[in-house]
Image (tube, rainbow, N blue to C red; front, side):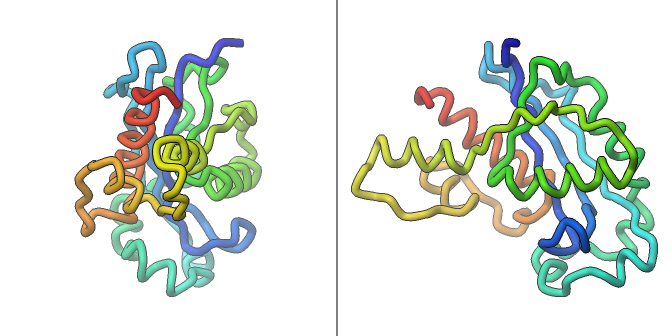
Length: 189
């Protein structure tokens, strides 16, 4: 099976434990590996509506980072099951790889969400971690510089402008991850 598309995703959650916490924002961009470009009509994002008991389980530190309020979710959020359906639509998943910055986090939350929603997981367990690939490229270019970099620091390393006030929104973080991914493809990772 040929890998033609990278489905880059980012999540914002109410905490770090997939069994206890919930996805509250999800975004995706799709990169065509033949052209190394985004497919704009497949860019998508949504907030996820939470019931009061789910919201009560939130981790205050996580909420301080993403700054997403219950009021925002009540107005703009959609039910998780609907968001997962929308996330899956339009992508040829048989030729796609789920991709993220530190995809272990996104993968465990998405797997849990699809299971809780009784939905079929579309990405067939093919995944790629941009953080790991970026680290390898940094080592290749500067083997003496092996410092771990988070998303912001990696973007700055590649001279990608960062708007700090937009960080920790799924829409912006997926864009930054895509920029880093495209940069690394163009450098031969």
